[in-house]
Image (cartoon, rainbow, N blue to C red; front, side):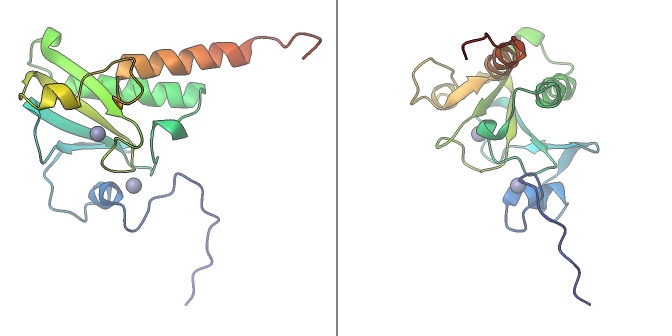
Length: 162
Ligand SMILES: [Zn+2]
Ligand SMILES: [Zn+2]
């Protein structure tokens, strides 16, 4: 029987995406956390004392796919809250949360890097936020600030001559 295709949205899971495969339990990664929206597992190439990846179950290609909506702001906040839970028992001042953005992300599926510091010597360089556009990494707080600023701008009433 040929299943009729449901029109796909940009957030549908992808057959070949490695993180979608992990989210579906098709890979051997040890799952550290799972709920209806997220899955967490160890980064295969740890860049700090602890290095956990938290991914969405939905296929969201990158930060550029996030919108300044209450829904997506909540999504990022939820990710940070879960990240803090995953690192509970560690010194809160040694926790760090952030994202890469294209073309610096290794996998085109949104993932929050959750660290317990210190970094490895190379991890510090790969996962440090800066204003330089070629750095390719921003903290979860920077992302939230951007989304919230954009949301506030959209909410402003338009002036007559626009
Ligand atoms: Zn995916
Ligand atoms: Zn990354």
